[in-house]
Length: 236
Image (cartoon, rainbow, N blue to C red; front, top):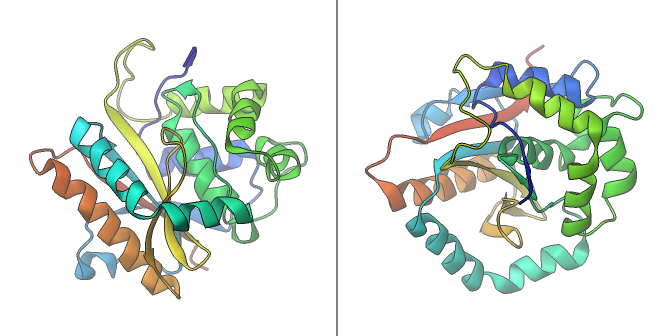
């Protein structure tokens, strides 16, 4: 990756402001913290949940587990890609994983997020990117100057001071959405989506995403550097 951005803080306030910068007018959805993935804690998350985002530490064990999962579900993954009903993009900008997770969450839930500002980054991806390949979408994202600026604004919006732009960051965002009756994980570092458990309704998706997140957390039980957010409908 030749281009590099500052990372975005895992912070609902930052991400909700970013939604508007990306082009959502009066968003009908918002990001919120998820404080645990056991059933009792998940009950506190507003419903419906349109996406879940996980921040996790990168490690060889984490990546090896994803490779194994991908090999086990290769047929399901190819079916998803063949239908081209899923917005999945590769990540070609260093430290862009926060933006990629938000884009994956929003672009796979366009019918719920609210009106898009004409010619905004999200409107552009809707008009131009939906029929592109994951690699072509990555090129669109990397080259979009307004998206570049929106990310940079979001990267300085958190409460924690950012590290130098050339710092080695070992934390990464990934996104889970409900698509084609599956809980699907979208991570631009990976060559394709990951297909997790089948789910017929929103509660099933929440449970499936929680199980997939739990599986990742069990690969690194010594780490406390996990954080979970959900994209939910705003309360009236």
